[in-house]
Image 1 (tube, chains in turn blue, yellow):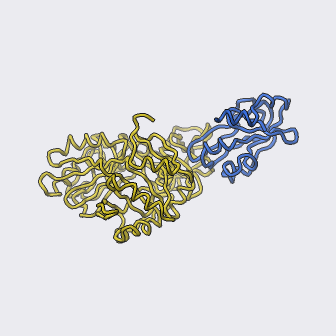
Image 2 (cartoon, chains in turn cyan, yellow):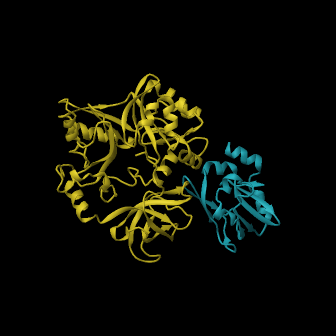
Image 3 (cartoon, chains in turn cyan, brown):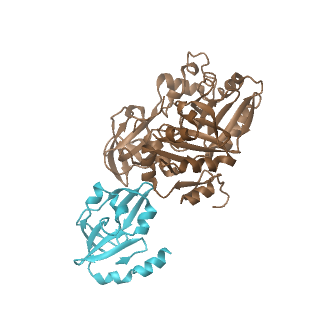
Length: 119
Length: 376
């Protein structure tokens, strides 16, 4: 598992990168009440706003961590956005993306570095 | 958080794991461990305890000794009937300005030999200056600093408070009375700002924490923060000053005409005689050009404060804007309030809110979103 400075986690599954947010981020957001997901097939660049999360407090964006194509989104979140709080690391995932080169993941933090990052 | 004021409950909030935030010059709990959603639902299911000590408590005492003189004086600043308020009763009011806008909204109680006003924290200093400027000839104006204010709200509030003083159960909605708790005289009203039955208790600072702890020890009572207070009041269709009402919105535009009794309207025995009467009385007769309405988004995306409203999915001018918007935990859908031109204010009217560049469908909806459960 790798981590971004935007508090996303990245996990490789069947040559795809699965993206979600960390427990820390889900706690900071508060109760999630709405998730707007991208269309599968969308080509994205690193830093693009691809997901909107509305919590009881405010709206926030999830950014594409890498260049690539969104191939699958977690449709369950449309009806059950609370999954982001209940299980941010598994059932609360947002999307899977296809990237050119999986070695690009090496540039992100590992768990120990992320723990240092959030203090 | 330097320069922020703290209520007498500050240490208790921290002990309870509150997340503290700045609010109107005070350091206040926005949520506790349960989180906003569960705190909201707990209040609707059982009883929630709120620290509202940041709000201003002001006593008006008639210099003549005759309460009618203080009531008549206050009527020069508010469009409601204060003279018609019976002893032991409370009602909602608002200070208006010469343009017919709202300077603050407040509660006023007739407590026999004086009036007790509860005003918003953010407006407190301005309200006091306003009253000193206009009411000093007829009233002594006493700002109550030595009392905290708590609200206990929800279907089990009566059971909880009655355990400490059985007389609480005998009060009905908007009654105001003195009840003893921990040997101290507390000023209790059966009211609140959540749409729930419940009480507000003004308690001397020295016993405030004891009272709060006694309530929190009860199974049905949880501490509730400002986050849930906001979603509770929005589901109940209640205005938040500075957002849904302000110096530019008249009481009639704000759909608060129910708070203006007939006696203060055209043809009434004490018609007018408050700031902005010309505009407000005219709007009561002929209707305002815009109106505060409930708005229910048809999708799941919340429409937050500032969301611009349109009549059509494309093109056309804006017809209004959202002034409060959030997710309603009890109605399990997003909800909003805002102002639209009167021609769009009818219940069921289709409107569109622009969220992140897209116009999303919504409908004008009756308020409250969730029926209130006051014990009338």
